[in-house]
Amino acid sequence: MSLRFTLLCLVMLSVRVGAQSPDVGVNGARLNATMQHMHTFGENADGGSDRVAYSIHNRVALEYLSELMRETGLVPRFDVAGNLVGHRTGRIEGLAPILAGSHIDTVPNGGHYDGIVGVMSAIEAARTLKENGIELDHPLEVVVWSNEEGGKTGSRSWAGTVQERELDLPSLGDKTLGEGMAYIGGEPKNLARNTRRPGDVAGYIELHVEQGAILDRQGIAIGVVEGIVGIKRWYITVRGFANHAGTTPMDQRQDALYATALMLTEIRRIITGESGRQVGTVGRLDVNPGAPNVIPGEVLFSLEIRDLSMEKVTRLFVQIERSLSDIALMNDVEVSFDQYYESPETPTDIGIQNLVRESAAALGLSSFDMPSGAGHDGQSMKGIAPLGMIFVPSKDGVSHAPTEFTSEEQIINGANVLLRTIIGMDQLLK
Ligand SMILES: [Zn+2]
Image (cartoon, rainbow, N blue to C red):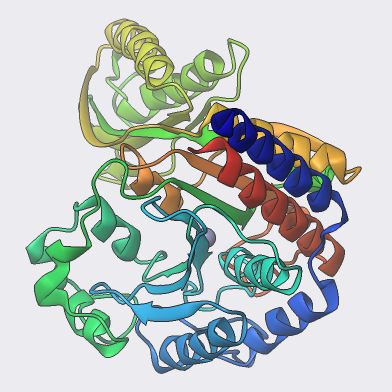
């Protein structure tokens, strides 16, 4: 009987929480006021933000956020990598925390939304829970990751993938990574303490601006992120023969640049030749010797392919490799391929995707399933905890620039979806 009674109580409790959440919403005016206040930390003459990681502006902004966390019922502390973590106790002892956050460091002359939207919304969500007397079973931690723009150092320290030698590398500011971490309250010598194991975190959710124009162009409020794309990069070298541009007849040339031009067209054809959201880019081209009166003898160019499926990235590359080799043969040049970078894809959790989609629908907001073409801190949660990401629109897809913009209403929409998703995760992730 008592077990049945306990179960009944639990059912009633979950119904109560479920029924409560539709009426709960963030204080939008307050959220946007804190967003505006963040402008003051490192705003430059162009109206952009120079709050690079480990700068004085970064440090002062973190002090402000620590204070704000205290006001909102979160207990702040800096971990050994200089990540700021605000902790709220959960109702059930022994459960791992639900983590919500993003970053506040910017690129030099960056914008006021990339990362900041996620941090300020997570703090506002925690504050809304407190004000409405909603307790979660799990502890809730709002995290401000350090140095996202300079290599995701803060979040990678949780994954245990920051190498000791990296601490001597320069950051985007005037300090090394190690000096920078210490400057904002970390202990770089003890970085290994940050390493999390699977189960140490119950789940991670990040609200972020899209940094592309898909949501903005289609007028969609919320992006349900299906995952962060995998990336592979190659250098491709085409070798011909450098010879006199005036005396070598057209049918006797081994023109590396002409062959490359045909190859670039072929790469575009292969990448766009099948359905899906894969992207391929040739972003660098070095022509040698690079003189107007010399037939180009050698060309080096880069190739990058991104997709949610690494298998697809590899398959497209195999097609490109075969096709480019044929072009080389037909044009009497040689081609070689050198892969130099690989970052595997990070899928998001299907259950959290559903929560984001349902939260948007319950608020009457449109949503769209999409990959993230850019990297994010959430990648570091791979293998540690289920991951979710919510996107809000970026005006004209502009990011990493002073003109980066997401409207107050769009931020409020994102924050409300984040709040509901956190409440949903509390039930889902047990
Ligand atoms: Zn970001």
